Amino acid sequence: MSNDSSTSMKCNEILRLLPPYLDGEVPGRVRDGIAAHLSSCPACRSEMEALKADVGLLELAGTPEVTPFLAARVMADIRQRQAIPVRRGFRPGWVLSMAAGVILVALSLGVGTLVGSGLAQGSTSTTGDDIFATATADPSLETYQSIMGSE
Image 1 (cartoon, rainbow, N blue to C red):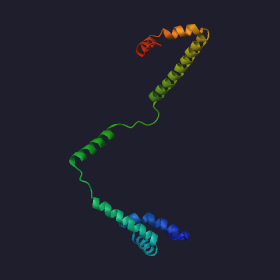
Image 2: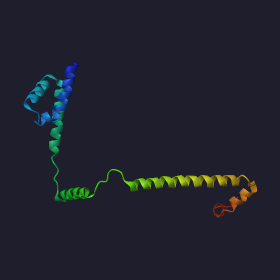
Image 3: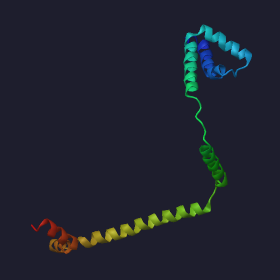
Image 4: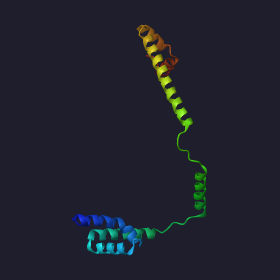
């Protein structure tokens, strides 16, 4: 591609048109312009050769055989998707369930805060001996001590 801005713009246009040009899908006048550009621009010519090589590799790969089983599965999937109505727009049930979820979370946070603050206030009045007695009365602690051995 040349450094000249008018040529560069033309190169961008040519590169965009190379696939349809290679497939023979561009009209005669455009096709002639592309051919003239390719004869004078090594960079675009190189891109054209790379595109031809890619197309050649795709042609070598060939088209896979479509089995009757695959065709039946695809058609069944299409029919199933067409049968399921797509719901768009405002859905009151969804809005109500979201509102109920928000209220439930808010209530849970409120109850948790009240219970947590009540526990925190109650624990400040106990002595160190009371806390130890409460902790050691836990049956899981006894189980732990019996497994690990008492210290």
